[in-house]
Length: 229
Figure 1 (cartoon, helix red, strand yellow):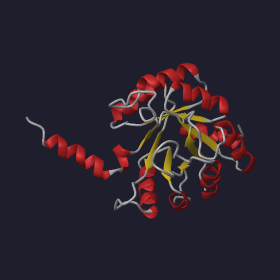
Figure 2 (cartoon, one colour; figure 1 turned 30 degrees about the vertical axis):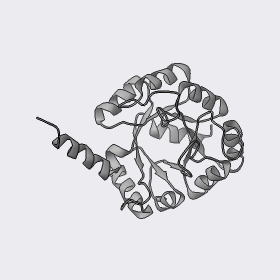
Figure 3 (cartoon, helix red, strand yellow; figure 1 turned 135 degrees about the vertical axis):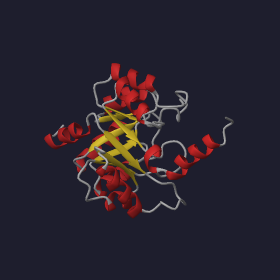
């Protein structure tokens, strides 16, 4: 790990990463809007930002915190920065950390995760965050050279049940078995969830929906008001 890479890891340690993403067809699905939300999150104390899409990453080039970039292509299977070409494009767009599918599933371009990471580093000086779905994924991703292990895909690959909140059990398992920094991500809906993830062993916590997705947040309040008293 280079000195600059170590500095990025240090800047994220113990902090909150805010994922600023909107789904296709939504009113906020605009790079400028996502960048504005990212800037607001930084004002609030975010240690890092996670952005989806090349235009979004480019639009947020002025941020003074590390940017985790990804490119979702497809809807099923491996679709988070699924190929080496996607990963290189994300790095070219300006991401400090490239988030890629870190599962053991076959990748569309036929490369292994280790081959993807190694070949990305031949051309780009970036960190790699592996979005994992199980302990086995995390172990394999660490062996493949990933710098950060995320719990992003827990509950979405069929290896683990989808928990109501963050998968605290998985976080603890990865903490006990791996040495790479852990980014807790997925279904962290409150400050209490974030604290629980840190207590379970996460080095940093990434929150998206609960901070940056108004439609979902609004639906939570609407549902609560409709409950019987």
